[in-house]
Length: 548
Image (cartoon, rainbow, N blue to C red; front, side):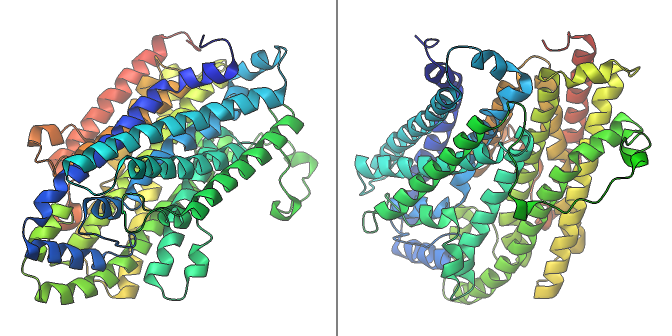
């Protein structure tokens, strides 16, 4: 049955993603809802929680924070949007990835029109997202029932639907961008737009009279619906906006796909094109270009543009967080004086000790390694795709040892991550100097540069998995691994999991460098695992048949 149509075949390919992301995010909601009663055991603890939420209102509007649904909605304001990683990767590779591998040529040789093939694949993605939303909604309802929440099954299902709509909209963005560029570049650009949307949505909660700017962000319309808060409910207009924008962008992408050459790109609008200078005959073929002197330099040139955008995203996010922390620190300084239970509540929420600027920024800095690891996922996907697309065959036709090829590519990725870490350090130090936020510069360097080993670990694992797995499976497995690590590190402490369970997450070994400095042994251990994974990947690449 699953091979009777493009729609069913594509939906079958998404089965792991549906179960993995649906159950993963759903269990995340179960955990946070189940932990809520322990946070409000006394009226004083409830009051302290409400006051604390007001100080962190830049995350999301704190509505009915003293109820299970309100607390869960606020607790994972923008964090739960990690689910967008799945449609981001799927949308960028849905058509472009198969074009790059050549499998779309075979599919289009069948008596099926381009429009039908693309439409069935798009329908499969939306069906998968709705299935994820269904699982998330059912598990949220189950978690709410165990915590005595006042929202019913309808509220849980609407919560899942709202997540599916925002995820589908960004999947449509990735699909549209993939009509103009490669799959990996489309995924990276969509990830940047997601982070930009989150920041733009925050602006009106930080700077007054800027709600008009936040209305430009899709995340703003996502936050207008809070189905888990019965006193707030959902905003049907906002949900229709997300659905309408997703449909509009998807239709635009399908029109471009139908009209362009397979393997080609759609023409960029004239007002977005960079001016082109005349090329002299001697420059027509870049035979002496620096990027062609070795595989390493060629890899650097290839990864330069993605590195620029991801550096801008991560460093910009870090600088913005410093500004946020400065405002939050001032609010908490007042709140602590009247609430003796504040430190205990903050520890349960996940922020740690609130008496220092570093503890507040440390709560937010844990998202930087996640972003860098997401960048590593896109580049590992690119490495796997090059083999499927036949590019590795061209490289290996030259007198280059296989070990040199894989190590040079990984070396270029490592160089890019160092650039990202160093720029993030500079941006954070500059923001702290401008805002007057006092930080230990040594710990700040440890926090910015300490995320590099985690990015290298994900990259090495991606190279290793590509020795046996296809690009789509490799990318899906890496992104799912990030979700599992995220779940362990952010939910495990709330559920009082043992230290042995927390050690299963790579985020555990990042520690809290802003507070405690660089965890040297953990960092060396991460680098050692990275080296082993890269060595195994090199051995596998040297011995395998290319394309298998």
